[in-house]
Amino acid sequence: MSATTTHWILTLVCEDRPGIVHAISGAIVEAEGNITESQQFSSDDTGTFFMRLQVESAASREAFEAALAPVTERYGMTWQLDVVGRPLRTLVLVSKAGHCLNDLLFRQRAGQLGVDIPLVLSNHPELGELAAFYGVPFESHPVATPGQKLAFEDRVLEVVEEHDIELVVLARYMQILSPELCGALAGRVINIHHSFLPGFKGANPYKQAHARGVKLIGATAHFVTSDLDEGPIIEQNVVRVDHTRTPAELVAIGQDEESRTLTQAVKWFSEDRVLLDGARTIIFK
Image 1: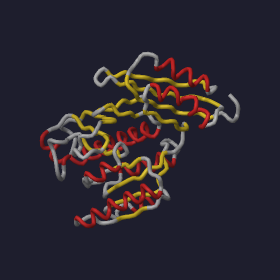
Image 2 (image 1 turned 60 degrees about the horizontal axis):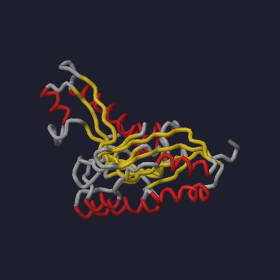
Image 3 (image 1 turned 30 degrees about the vertical axis):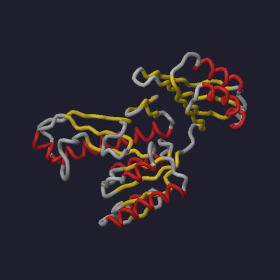
Image 4 (image 1 turned 90 degrees about the vertical axis):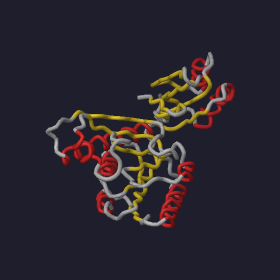
């Protein structure tokens, strides 16, 4: 491939029918493309076909899309064409806990996470210094009253519009999003929570877990929907613990799991590896 070659990511979803792979491969050949990575999955549950390709091609976006158009139309595909490695424009929402935010900002700065974070938005001022350390703008707005919460969500939508945000990450943002905001950002909001839901709710879940002698601590990253903590799951992790662990140690272990689980989910999403199949996700690792 020449120096003008672009490395593309192509994702597609459609009804599972014969000939899809052959047709897509032919379109890529027509665009003078070379497939460097290919993954596919047929869902028996929904009768849906999913595919993710990475393709090197010297064709322009317009020429590539023109080559794909007959196939995508024939099969009624929902599809997306993007450039490998393009940073995803990402808004992060936080409250007071900084472990997930720190992990996201560190990995972004280290080049380990393909996101561009133009702003961190919070309902508390505590994490302003952490964001400033990484050189990321920070805003805090209280949400103590219904009017303030509505204004906060309006600000979220303003930022999404201003910065053409593609992903919103709730990095331990301890507020429930309204159904209206969930609807406006459907499929673009990822949340993280500990594995103790629904057993240990409210304040001090790790203290409750310690009192009950839990043996596993974990975290779940999922898409946000209007059904609280029931959106499609993207990633989960777990670690074993025992009776010797203090509540403070459980907190530290849990925060590590939350950080790595959320970061992994964001990484997969930023690489177009997460596709929705009804109430679950297809992850092309």
